[in-house]
Image (cartoon, rainbow, N blue to C red; front, side):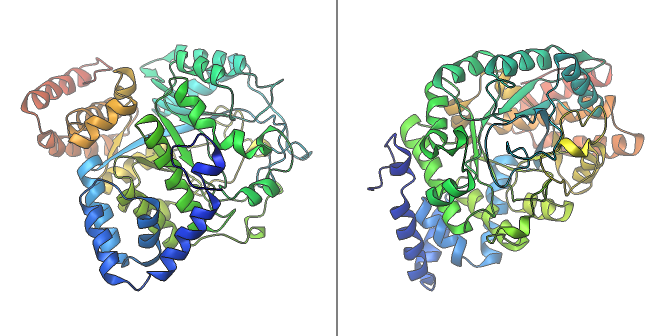
Length: 468
């Protein structure tokens, strides 16, 4: 199969032969220090790298230099902001046979559960009581139990819940690949980002890992982002489940997918997620032979950051607190906090017999916020860009020009102020106020700085939901 970045066929824009050639080229040049230095210099220009260049850095770039460059690029585009969100599991009914997921159809040990709209309201209130403003809804693939109508009704329910000062201002959606028509319905429901993990880009491995169900169709799944973007969803999030296949193969393919979306639609993925396989009901991660250690994981994050400098990188509570701190340092810009991976797990704590995977970072959202402040990060609950229409190529244009600092930085400070006033204990409130005071002068535009200063005072006085 011939590689064609603009092709609409999965096997041509994720071309196996091109990936094998890329890995061979990286092997051949692993000691070519002049070439590695040239690619590092190119990355420092913050215009991005292609999958071949990035694959060589993943394999051979000096660790200290690579990590330092990743820190610098992240600081220039994202500053010290870390966006916070939580997953909300609606249903674990699923008709697929994915061997790495406890939701697979043949698992008779797991309790099947689907939230009613009333139960969703109670879950949302529990999340709002933590302080969350941004959710990612999750559901297994089941056309009978989880049809698109159920997803749309659930989104409407979530947006409609207002509890005390709480409100979910952005709902991201992580559901199975679907039709262009149904993606249009999600667009009309005013979702944030549409998220779909490829799991693995290796077609033969994909077939063995997905033996039954609609997800077994590699092309249908891999081409889903094209259908979503044709339907007008211009913010999409991609990712692989590291541990299923060799990580260098997955890394090259992940960047090829990003290059494809950029080539066809003029904008690449809004986010890239880097989950690693974790233990779950009947799932032993040690039974998969391609696991990666923490240092390799950090290299992957750093290489994504220098190769796709404008893209958000997400690490969930699958990872330990220690690993997440390392990943934040070299490129991650979004994390989940206080997460539950079971259906109904927020109202009833963790219902272990319905969860998708074991969590490694069990800290509450409040503890995560306190940790971020202590480490010099700005916990951000911002959703302003979606509500102001700054999505897709409009967001990327602002990001590439540096003007996003006059939007994201102010909104991060204002949403942090809301959190401090409504949810934080006194110790966290004091530390957060000190952080806001120190960060306010870093808003580049003087008028924006003055506007935000006024909004912060109004938030302290009891008003809410300002954005620039």
